[in-house]
Length: 350
Image 1 (tube, one colour):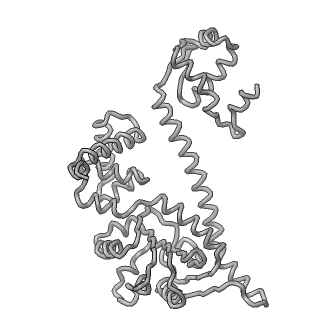
Image 2 (cartoon, rainbow, N blue to C red):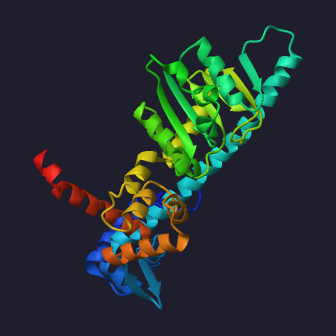
Image 3 (spheres, rainbow, N blue to C red):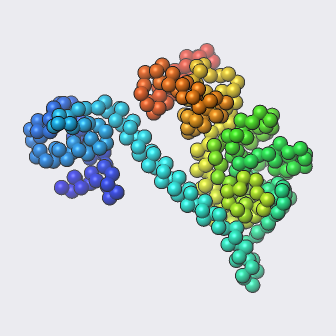
């Protein structure tokens, strides 16, 4: 009885490991009915039916009119994996949203604390206002200390392409002669804007790691794991009021947010690789971006394709590989890419 209870989770989900011996026996013997399965295993029919019901919920079998139908295990496992990852993604998205709600309150609360305490402030806080507040604040911080590590989220990168040369260079000029590791998150719209292509290439050439995201959450940055910059109103893409706070604790929280968004984003080199014509099949560009986490519509938009064209290319790829789901398509396409790479002359000669 304890083993059976262990198969269930408190949230109602079913644990597969405890059912694997049952599924193994069923797949090898293929009993046609629950009664036949019970007779085969010498177990109570009620217990067998309960196991089959759980396996049916997991997608490995179906029982209709007391007849058991078996599903290919790899297909069932793929479907179950997608469902599990979907739940994890939803939970992570919820946690990220809650974290951002809290971050939105931080600047105002810090200002309130500073006004309400007579003691000497124990936080180093700077505030900048104006149309170029992010660039001004960044430059102020660099005059005090050139950091070794910078994580920057810029949903609006127009500052990098500004006609005012003093602001165009403001974000990176202070690192001249210093080894600074910079990660830059930018929006898909800016990353795919032809007007910014030269600047993006220049940043890549100078060693900046760039990833693009369909919806970066806000302008913010973290330097050296102890100082953060964020807008007074969280969510602004190019704020007119920016606060810099020296706080390792807050930096750790924002780094967690940054790493989550960075993990969802894709390297801008992927887009450049596709644009340079490296795709061997019409659908390769779509699948390359989707394989890195973009939805079909976002991948289409990033390649300058109409949504209908993007969907047609994915459908053509599914027909080519003989698969019926995007999960299986991704696996088949990656396998084909690895095979092509191993068979290429450069691979053979290396």
